Image (cartoon, rainbow, N blue to C red; front, side):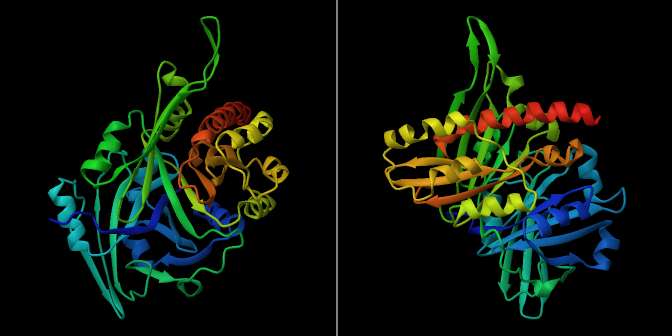
Length: 387
């Protein structure tokens, strides 16, 4: 039996939305992605949904929207708001991946499907996951397969233009669940991933025996040893489980699911500034975070941050790391807050610049958690006004 699944990296992820044109404006106009493929007329007729693929660097986002009530997209949206329904991974050899997962008792949703085209072959299958209606797909692209997938047609030559914000690759994927051990243990037992990182904390503020605000979180990151693909999983912590923003996500999403995808960039400050100029909104970090930042960097022995502190403060970019290895990160507003529309869902994107640090922002988690909870409270008020 193979000692790994043969994953090479992320291939794409599949987003189901009610309004494809709104997503097209978001990816093409705001994020600077290039539309590289569309579902063919025969695929639309057969599946009852329209679909487009947007690309930046190695990133591919498949977005589909229902045209008929019997389509998979329509069934997903009857349960969930807009969200990720499937994550796809490139693999070295599809049969090796199948045999590896079969020996670990994966739940297969399909047999291996094969499409041969001039120049190459496309092979794929899917499995169920503990993330409710989110599935995992494995894809082998043998030779120079000429399309994104069977029954898709190229747009703009099938290749993305250079992204104006510097988006190149996916850094990691984070999911939320009411309870994460079934998810984490599944990554270990079925996918063969290993423990990479973890954190837990409370943000609760107390006055005597009375809680004023806050909640808690536990997070574990699992990694594929061969490819370095990483998945973070969050769960709420007691005693204020119901108030956690992780619990809020699961309620808004109507179950466990993918909370955010992180894009890696070389220079985060110009990326954030150009994204803001294109209408993207980000979570704010409290001013006290930057007041305390010089002392915190001194404590963790980071002396080489080359980005101006004022630019980081102005753009609400977070800093973390240790021993002169650091990372910079920021989080977009989730879709339901951005559009003031509950059906847009609680998913959001993260942007990361890494300068040697491979962690997940241990020192930033509390600031992020507090910021998300603050944004969610503001979102609730805004939705009440809109409603």
